[in-house]
Amino acid sequence: MSIEVKVPVLPESVSDATIASWHKKAGDTVRRDENLLDLETDKVVLEVPSPVDGVLKEIKFQAGDTVTSQQVVAIIEEGAAAGQKAPETKADAPKKDEAGKEAARPAEAGPPKKDKETGKVELPPGAAAYAAREGVDASQVEGTGRGGRVTKEDLVRHVTSGGGARPEQRVPMTRIRQRIAERMMQSKNSIAMLTSFNEVNLGKVMAMRKELGEPFEKSHGVRLGFMSFFAKAAANALQRHPIVNASVDGNDIIYHGYADISIAVATDKGLVTPVLRNVENMSFAEVEAAIAGYAKAAREGGLKLEDLQGGTFTITNGGTFGSLMSTPIVNPPQSAILGMHAIKERPIAENGQVVVAPMMYIALSYDHRIIDGKDAVLFLVDIKNQLENPHRMLLGL
Image 1 (tube, helix red, strand yellow):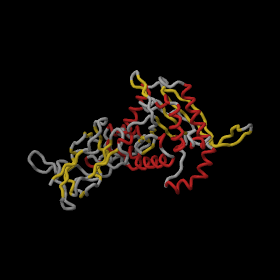
Image 2 (cartoon, helix red, strand yellow):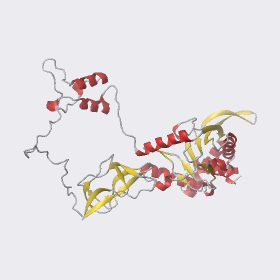
Image 3 (spheres, helix red, strand yellow):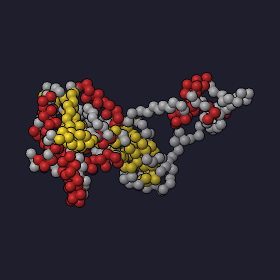
Image 4 (cartoon, one colour):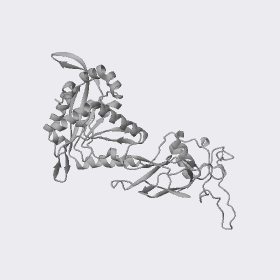
């Protein structure tokens, strides 16, 4: 019995998807719930599992093709024997001439064709110009043209694989990267963005982590990191400075009475921002567990679309990669984003004495249409005061 494999139902905000890769080919045996292909949307990569045991009989779309919700992408012959081959496709069938006879296949790749007198590799004019421009020794290139001749395509393939002096490669943007680019331009063009900075002495936070990190992990099964301190500090500050947690809708300002904080997570495919909801009501352990779960899901491609939707404020940590200072970009319709950076020991003045302390620059980029400079500065000072006095944060002060 033939079973159709369809694109999952996509949310209203996602119109289509791109086939990122197939994990099976026609003729392969598949098991129920085994991942057949990956679909890339604007936000996440979705897995499409096999609905039954059987043999993958037909693949209707290839990697790079665009598909829509509930579109049939493959056919599975349910219960077919292992190793059963799929029907021969037009691409696989031998080509025939007009008389119906099987046509000869193109010449196989072979050594480069050389001039008998000079010993130099013979190249068509276009290929010769390309080889000269890229500094390619044609004698080192395998020819796939008629009689083993080196074509321009052979030279291009050789250069893009690293064999030339000036390699270049052109690849299309992934759907996620296209979406990131679109959102960044939307932010640039629609928000009057400004960034304010401050610095934080994280000595007391680091001392608390050192003292309580081990019992915290034993008790909750998750490490006590820096992000929970910043997430809780931000949630508290957002309650006291609600304009930073607001968003613009036409000529209206929407004030959010909850702190749904997007946490920027870097993946191989680009930056994603899963949302911690109602952080003001979460414990440190709940924040750390949620962040660890999202990070694992992001690395393994397991994030769901609903994990990325919403959010009233964002925190991003460029310090993970060594950034000392940056101006993060607001993610609309949010109005602000907090940037964390690398912790560096620096000399500072403390009680009239010069001491060395673990310092971090923090940045708040914000929509100046609704957030005044005073509000932004006071918000950053609030964050600073909480992190430099973490015991007050634990008491909700």
